[in-house]
Image 1 (tube, rainbow, N blue to C red):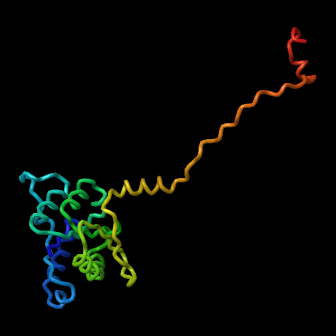
Image 2: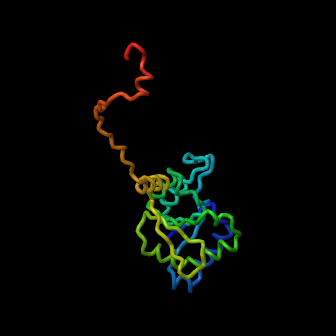
Length: 197
């Protein structure tokens, strides 16, 4: 299984995981994976499929080369419509981190990924693609990967908001009743012009 760490994951971290992937004990427990960097598939400005600040071309190239899994340090990737679509169309299993992950140093990032690697490997082995997974920013034993929708997160948020919004009924219209005829009061008589009296 070929796994790409995107350009938002430090290249040193990719090298650490390439080393781990070749360890016999780890292969026995987790399985054989080929770890690579997305930069190997990223088109250069002179290439025909190059698009500035766009991950769709490397995702397509990676899928063509047999890639099936992306570990993304880009916490906004699933909010970018064309990139999300490229991941879905390529049939990728994608693992995302929270936004705070990008603010961490190299060692915290590595330790978190190592901590969750057995669960990620398990999802890779038995996961159906396309699927998006969220890696929790926690070392707690009970912290688990969470599957997230491949649909547009902004659309889902809007739909939830609409679904939970209380429905307002239009105010009921009161039937207009004809005014009741009554005897004029002293004030009515004083206010009335002299001709009406």
